[in-house]
Image (cartoon, each protein chain N blue to C red):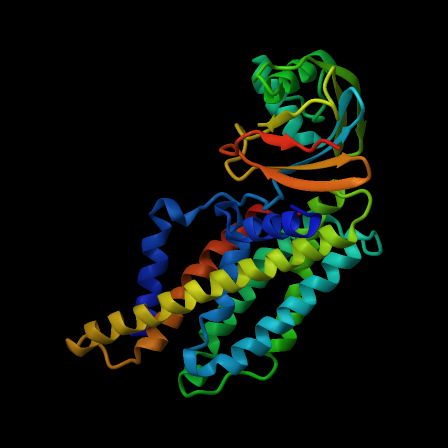
Length: 201
Length: 166
């Protein structure tokens, strides 16, 4: 196996590992507001997030950017909280088919934070010939994210259908999408708030 | 209705174990070993995070980990000798000789040589460093032999990796 493939696998494992709950949680928060028909908007947000974290990952690993790791680790759950709260605030607009245009900008900024988080430990491991390992790791992170997002999209569709069936029993008139969005966003926000508190620098 | 649902969810999760999931920092649980294949020896240069190394060595030696993430050289040596194994074609374990241990900021640099092996004899390397500490531990091993390079990932369940010969 070459450096590229090895570090691609390392990046993929880093995202899908159980220990990677903070990144998975952020992706869930990011994706929760979209339905399959919103795939263009979702793609724009995910692309912005990818550009953001690729940028800081490259800058930090090459030593051009130094961010105190305590602040990065604190800010990661803060990005999750912010995304979750935004989901809750925008849930009615999202249900009407309109998602905020500023969302890709936030995703880009939040991506900068997550990239710095990826870089913290990678920088200590790599000493020479970092180009291929860095590229491979980043590609692996992307593949991991795509995997998580596809799984989340399937789970959300299934959840919407399940809530739709329960709703037909006359429990509520609120759209299944809104209930799912509120439930997922509230849970994610709560967990990330606890993490942010625990990681206060 | 949604407010009620969210409130119920918040109250419900607050009383369950998922309410306070550990705020574990998502570190990359990994080490890097550069294995240089020489004519009659293999040199292993291992980069390992000091906090993890210190915790594992202390647990192995049966005492609490030092607060400064330091490692006693003799204990570190015993730990590495137990977790890193080089075997020859017949499956015999080759002795590892320490060629230094040094701390550089948050990383320990550890060096070992397996004499009597190398480019002439097919050997295998297994590394279980820190796998007892992290379930997602991945040890990156880069083999360098006669100008060629190959990288492999070793986890807790990986078989020993064959070391390329020139």
